[in-house]
Image 1 (cartoon, rainbow, N blue to C red):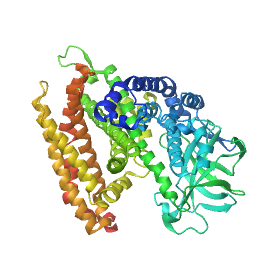
Image 2 (cartoon, rainbow, N blue to C red; image 1 turned 180 degrees about the vertical axis):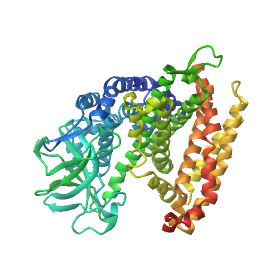
Image 3 (cartoon, rainbow, N blue to C red; image 1 turned 90 degrees about the horizontal axis):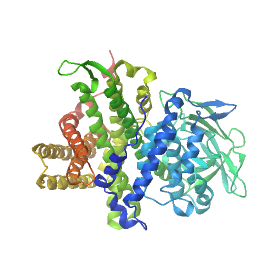
Image 4 (spheres, helix red, strand yellow; image 1 turned 45 degrees about the horizontal axis):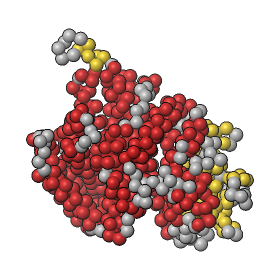
Length: 596
């Protein structure tokens, strides 16, 4: 297995030239200058490369286990988590009044890319903690914030999200977990499944956020409340004390992320687990969606991260492995010299470039939505809402292809576990499933995001893309080539398709919102490839005027953008065709179609 290298230069270019992190400067008391940003990311890279990456393969082989009713994490994980916490990495974007550093969350995103590439299973623990902290900060009362946020931000305590039950997966309306009032607290009883890092020994306490129903709650999602349920109750000094009535019953045996314990959690087998209401009664879904939206962009980042790790290993292997002869037939050749291997590697790289650009553009937009106000905030919130299902859905779909291609580059050696590349494909396979399947993300995009405002936010995005494409098309520059112009024109053609397909989807949603969801996945993928192409063009245009990129880096960007426009963007045509003419064949399906 090759060593992981934090892609410092690519991340810096994405943050500064594509996502334009300087947009945040007017909102910050102390702007994040380049020196500070470089220092943070440099140290994050060292942590990822030297502390967290080395325990990735061993953690996959060892996995987590239950001993005497307690979940034991893989060897080295506790020490790695302590190094992560002591470095202050959990508190980067946390509120200063609770011990956070108050930095924009996009910086935490850049740090987390390295953590997740280094070790996806490990990274899920801090990811869930970050989501839990955001939900508590935005929805809990001041007393709960003061009790729980400081130690969660310091990494002394971890957090989880408890939604799914045996009878309630994506359908949260079916949640049956009960919450019974008991003085100032509540008694929680029920079972939750698929709880990531639901138990472990890496922190002194684990703060579970649990969805449950009050006795008088209305049916459906309108009757769900959210509760803090700590593993250990707090004493009068705010320290962990008596064990709460909850435990991990078992661990799931999974295809991948073996070192991340996925727990079946039982709450209240005896007198009932003590919980504390977060926000208002019966408004738990509102608070939980704070966590879920945070997690959905986080899962998109995981898709980028694990795909980047797979690409790096495939690239290293292709330069070392010799098979066949060189073009002159004079010596054996490294497989990277063969055109089909070059095709696979650039299929991976060009998509990674587009995926990374989208991740950081969406992260900056999210920060603007939190920092700004008035019309600017309204637009940023709408744009963030559009980006979220594309980030989660489209990027994690591309991660499947990239991790599979990494195996293909290795040939037969890729199918053997000892080379390590198969782990990335196994780990990546969960990403289109959890935090809402990609089908749900697509329906969210076409339903909540497109249909609700009759396409206003989407059309605004398309107008902004068109304006930038036109400006780049008319820009003159000595290094600008005919191919660069052709790339812009290809994206303009795809933009026209996207407009047409948006109209089709809006019309279909008006006619029959249920049947129209047959178009949702194709629409999400179409928009992913379009947005990816737009940001690829932006990268190429920014590289032309960059004073920081070397000539070789500029050439690399040109190769990536040209390949994307010629080989990846045409996939949008297929999705557009399916949207325009394919709905009828789906609408006509019934059980009879699958009978022989």
